[in-house]
Amino acid sequence: MVDDEPQIRRSLRVTLRANGYEVDEAATGEAALDLASVSPPILVILDLSLPDLNGVEVTRRLREWTQLPIVILSVRGDDEAKVRALDAGADDYLTKPFSVPELLARMRVALRHSASETAAASGLIASGEVEIDLTRRVVRRAGREVHLTPTEYGLLRYMAQNAERVVTHGQLLRAVLGAGYEDAVGSLRVFITNLRKKLEAEPSAPRLIVTEPGVGYRLKLD
Image 1 (cartoon, rainbow, N blue to C red):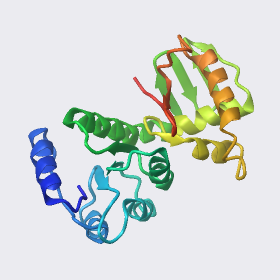
Image 2: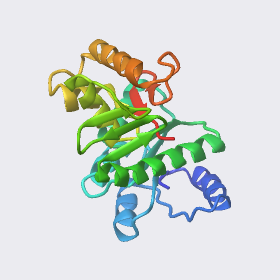
Image 3: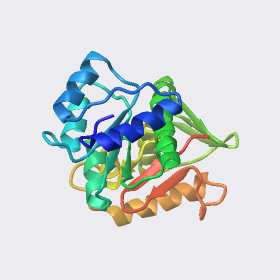
Image 4: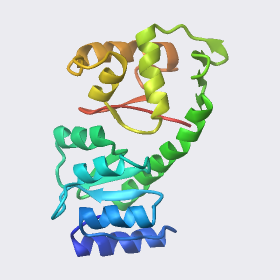
């Protein structure tokens, strides 16, 4: 847990320990990086506004050597701040003030994403009726193969490889269409709509590919 406000650290420490977590604390970005290197955690709760390094820089430096889940906390709720943190490698973003149940839920989601990386490494991702075989490049729904265009498959593959994690519009567009297409959000929405029509039981109320308003999308696992 990284936050320069002692009262927030104290409150979170009590809450997290009451829910079965062991908690290490840091008040600065440099201290957090040192602590993480000595005693790697299962998850980092990271405030964006720190007295030395900001949370985005701490995230970037952590991502140089680890893929541990990172949940960002900030008083800033604008989409630009969220996108910067997520593009730097954060798994999720929570705006202060927040409820304890919501924080615990976001932590569970981030930990599920971490666990899903093992499944992605094996080449098989499943959620509900949908099965994505990354090794064979085959997608099935209810046991039947679904035909996807190369772009649709590329988008789905990237989200599957980052299942349970928020991926920004820019991340998706760069990964699938390449550099220079980061602003093609309108086209991205069309591709996502088509994917939902092919994969969702109710495309108008998606449960697999969920929109993160103003930021991007999240592929959810059951």
